[in-house]
Amino acid sequence: MPSGEPGFASEAYLRAKAVWRGSAVRRRKRVASDVPGGRPFGGGRDPRALGEVLNSMASDMGWSLELEQARLIAEWAEFAGDATAEHTTVVGISNGVLQVQCDSTTWATELRRLRAEMLTRLLRDYPDAEVRDLRFLAPGAPSWRHGPRTVRGRGPRDTYG
Image 1 (cartoon, rainbow, N blue to C red):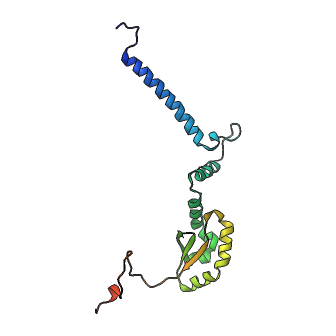
Image 2 (image 1 turned 30 degrees about the vertical axis):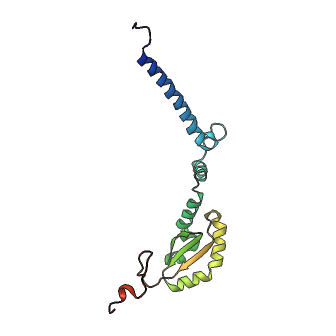
Image 3 (image 1 turned 120 degrees about the vertical axis):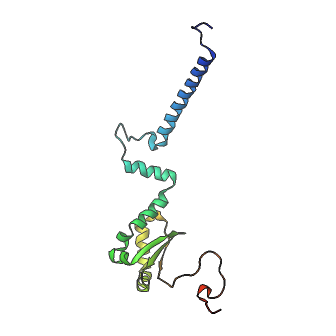
């Protein structure tokens, strides 16, 4: 084969290179379009604020609810006050119920009395957390239940049959 004519290997190389360049261009366009607004810049060449970009990405990915609930749990001391936060711990949020563990029955009783006021403030300050109710748990006796199945009777404390 003369040196001026392209061979099979060089033709395949040129075709593969063209396909790769086309996919790289498509990849660049896709990445640029993933950012809200098509690019990380606002109007003109001014960059958008990082918080704005992260908020729009979180809402696009469906993380807004979980982030708002995590913010509520992290800011519990500010929300409830220092005195209350010293005696309570947020256990978690399940089915729209914020569960708070109190270190004494006195605190649990007092917070149950203030439940309506706290729930109103919570709905006003954290509307996207989707918390519908508050539950204050008093400390109780240790539970001997481990797992979904139980047997009637006293269990491990029954030493005399």
